[in-house]
Length: 333
Image (cartoon, rainbow, N blue to C red):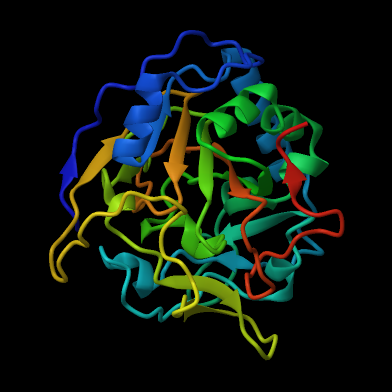
């Protein structure tokens, strides 16, 4: 396991109002550029955070189990477990039709450990068995849409230099008590690849995230020394998904990135814990290595996350997630 450091003090914030049109301060932007992530406490009010948590729990309680294909979501892939991300994958996340056609729908993906390994029977009630809900909450669910496509998030995207930011996916990740799986070190641009890379994650805690229930941890500054070498794509024969090399024609860093020397093969990154309170927003650079440990506690760790890419960069048909008919959602209105 990579070394872990305790959580640093969060970035200061001037207000907890949900509808502010403020972008990032110069100090916040500097922290993001240096570290590859930025923790903004009280980004959502307590009432909005509680409302979103209630909406997520309602979705879990009300989806029909009888018609569900029981698709599981796996986070086990050896390509992302390496600190320099150069190994090949051995286990795909998921690749059935239910997953591949979820880009314009709200669908539910089970935790692997919610099932008996011998009988494959569900061991938990359905609302305690789901790994994540995705991937079109930001358009189809009014509560999550109103939280995603906001002037505040548009202002933050503008601070980060986006010219045409597009929201391409959104998820509630549940990190269920006792069975919420570990997520190995990974980079978001591997899964949402543009050429050159441009993805940024907007990660919002709906419950307190702690070391005990599987908070995030970050390899600080790794976005400047860890290229995107592989990408998560659809297989050419349409049979599922796989990790493929970016190739000589694909960029490994964002446009105008300040790149440092890559970490030596065999060396380990040091990860800093990101324990946060409910209502906190965390911005995550697409090249940044980050992870979360298994939730072995009796408390869930619900979060809502959406990802933004630069609409002016190339997003091709190899990517696992394909745009809906109307295209990815515009953040600038």
